[in-house]
Length: 391
Image 1 (spheres, helix red, strand yellow):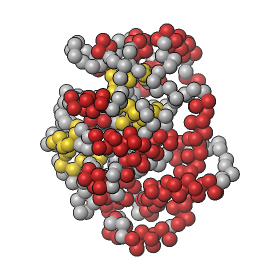
Image 2: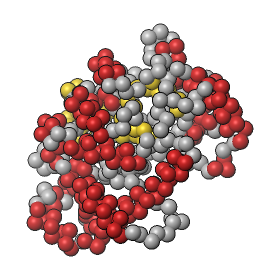
Image 3: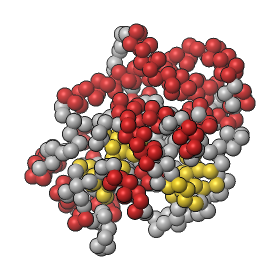
Image 4: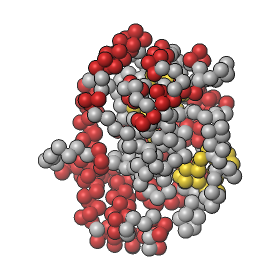
């Protein structure tokens, strides 16, 4: 599933105000709680390392008319201790409500996860590699990112020009100061990984290749054309993540132009990569071609960044689903839009665009019984009832 974090103004959960919080849009309005305040306070204390900064960030955002943190008064922008203490004392009630809401969302999500487990269903989450500049994470940990003295990003992340995007993609997300992370033994990343596995059974690391190298673009440049590849933290960060993650529960998003060193890194640590059937072609060496699939892969018909299979139009949707299910890849992922046979109107996201994304939804009444019976039959025939990721 897509990240649970609060989406940005365009609806994207990949540019959130927080890498740790759950979006309050997921809160179940039907639920009424008699909170165990001892349990709540225990959870808040355990999560205070991100929770208090997130709550304070959201309250200040509201108080300051939604301005980015770089435009806040200097004492708050720079997190001067006296100014932070004073504002916490002044706005304690509002901050407490944001913190309590995250505790309630934790209860909601915990109930969903428990029900899923009872049904034999694993939850597969997504961890965006980069975080948004205008976020609690960057504001509270400015020393961990490549920023100017003003707090503005000096460089931003993206990908270079390619066949699909002649200007490349300039995401605007900030880049990490890896020396600063090393100095803290990657504590922020360990905490983030632990948080992900509080919510999910499996986790995909989005843009896995950034462990090896990232496309660094000067922040003032209008496109991604003038960027450069800069070295990532490689095994150091991956080992820190794996120190916290349950064994065998990480998947790498390794799509695009992937250097051999990234493949070697993934394989060295026994992490599954990805194959997307929409990307198959006549190139005999293309790893997305079904004949090149291996067990250390997760196969998708398409991802949230692709058109639906019907909209894509390469092959009949059921043929592609069957191809995915018959793949030797350890896990097959079929987007619900493909199971429903929907066209481009149900596409989730078009990379490099800001409007018209992240809004597709469905009603249970729209799920066709014939389609689910067919899928169940195909899963049984493929012997995909069990795989290495089963809990």
